Amino acid sequence: ITMKVAFRVNGQAHSLAVDPRTTLLDALREHLGLTGTKKGCDHGQCGACTAIVDGRRMNTCLSLALMHESSEIDTIEELGRVEELHPMQAAFIAHDGYQCGYCTPGQILSAVATLDEIAAGIPSAATRRVSQPSPASPEEIRERMSGNLCRCAAYPNIIAAITDVQE
Ligand code: FES
Image (cartoon, rainbow, N blue to C red; front, side):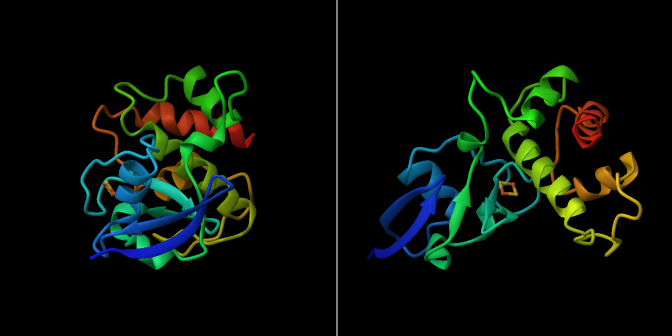
């Protein structure tokens, strides 16, 4: 059995027929070939599958594709190009904010969303704290990025990259 769902990914409209059990992550990777969104744990613990869904970051492995009728989804493929990197991508390179690179797409999307959330006065999901004053401290950025794990432990460089973009 398949069911239809229509949403926009990186500004392009897609209509898919999917098994109802298909996660948004698998729809992106397997149906649309957007493999920049990574599958790490596949159960909501690592953040490798982070995408921006209707303006908020989300672990796409935890959500069924069918739940996203009419959603606007942005993935790492649309954030920047090799010729014109997003400032967050450039900062990750400048600060060596990765080692193996597997978690990097999720880290970068989450980092962009983190700074957007801080700028918009959205409280931290972990502490409900609102950044006051902005810019946020490295400690707060670390807390807001706590849903994105890096097995290589490049955390200090990741936080340095995000702090650099914020300033
Ligand atoms: Fe989704 Fe790990 S693959 S949180």
